[in-house]
Length: 83
Image (cartoon, rainbow, N blue to C red; front, side):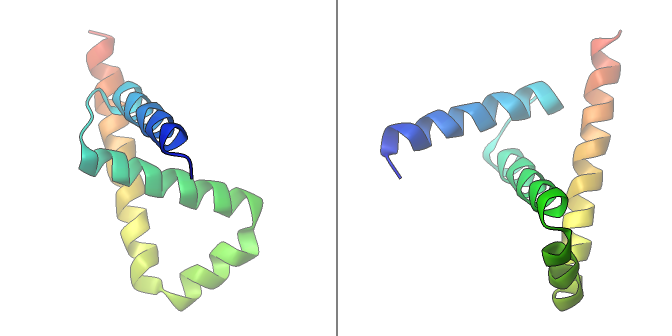
């Protein structure tokens, strides 16, 4: 992939993470990226995700934890913005 495009996508992910969670760091960006990829695949190819979940139940639990963590951070961020 072209370096410039990668840098621009990294910037997009960083800004999205900041807007979603109110802060950004590399670990949060990686969690958001996992959530985005998993969610997209789950919507576009549900049988593939079902197979993956069955094959890797530990990973399924891990992604569920990531999704719940992002959801909680997003709710806290939105609550802070409304104050």
